Image (cartoon, rainbow, N blue to C red; front, side):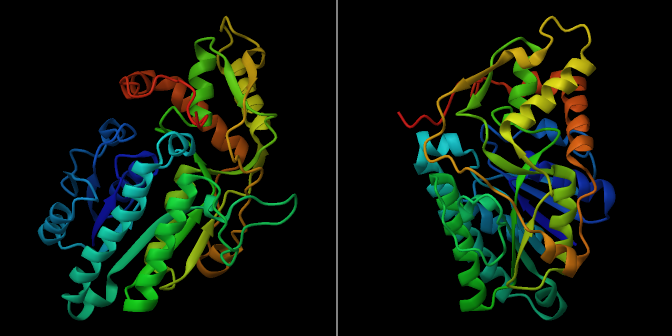
Length: 351
């Protein structure tokens, strides 16, 4: 099977490619624009494999993307390319609208034309897997969970752009019969994550004695999903998910932001016994909250469990330990990714 993965140099995309090259016999085409968050260093371990191909392209460039389809004749598309950081979407929404909405439309348009010209088994097995987020559902109360049927109520420019792309994918299925599946995941974490996200930011700052900024009171709740668990779920949905259906993917790990940071600090105290900054909790400061910050996300992942038999393999404790150990052992990667486009500054104040 030839699989095009858009955004394959990003955090989740690169994990997906490493999984496919190392654990399967499929051929992977990485289609990535290489924005600030795209890093080919994350794919060094598979870059020399003859089943891996890289094409630098923008999903908003229809002519180039269409040519890549004709060159590789894909059997499936896994669409992970997106502008994904909420704070950046507050400071500059335009790029999110262009990539997440127009880019997704372009992929759907190109893919549908390509699919319509396929015949027999090739047409029957073709799939378009759209990878989205739980943020499209908005904010939860204290006890309920996001279901696949939960109404969309996006509260940030980022989540609004992803909600728009989800609706486009749904429309292509119902209007054109185009074979799609959609997944909405909770907060991912793990190795190779760009350091503007909470967990790698805290690890990097704590190691060098910088402040550990907590938005507002730190009681915002997220469900945390280890990235390698996520990619196994994505592949199960790609292969066996029912066409036109949405599957929520969660880690069954609801934690407040404060709990996450305390866990990281405790692990760093243990793993860096000679650190001059112990206890690392002393570096925590509270800063102004993000505008429109959703209070709680939590996913009901019972559908993917019941239909496809998927459950996360990592607990919050095992996944966090693996994550901290990876960052401590891969300082060279962390230094290279900090190329000047992001230097740890506060984003998303909306000013």
